[in-house]
Image (cartoon, rainbow, N blue to C red; front, side, top):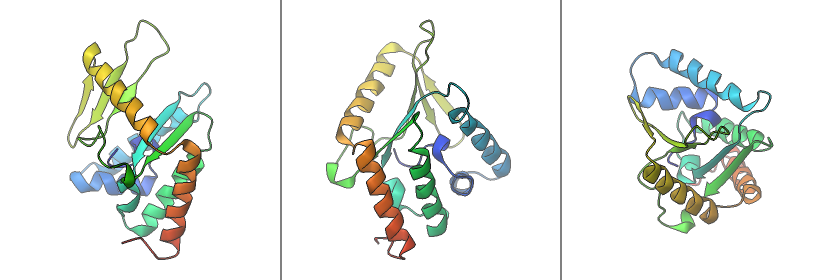
Length: 171
């Protein structure tokens, strides 16, 4: 919610995000993030459903040129059939994921339980307990209903990009 998800980041945006909280190993971590993104373009790619907070689209991580490229990238990947991006606009007010971003991992194999993944500054956290996963699923469902639809979100992203490209960052 607070930033663009790693699977949807451009190389320069990822580098800027990684450099904010880490010293060293930046390039290795950027390469890993870029390799992980390949999952979205392979045969039988999984579905990625992301709700991105409007705040992540206005904070110029890496500068305005990097931000413009990032938004353009979001527009491009949102056209893929396996990628669904929704923007959660400011005007919805508070939301149940205000505490931080998370990912829900769902697997097609019935013997594999759903999991919640949270990336932190120096580590990652996986939640596997059924009641915890159900709570995050409820939050995600509320976010998706509250957020703009994927079509409205693409329009919103286009307006953000046009504002940045025109030199009016909205600040």
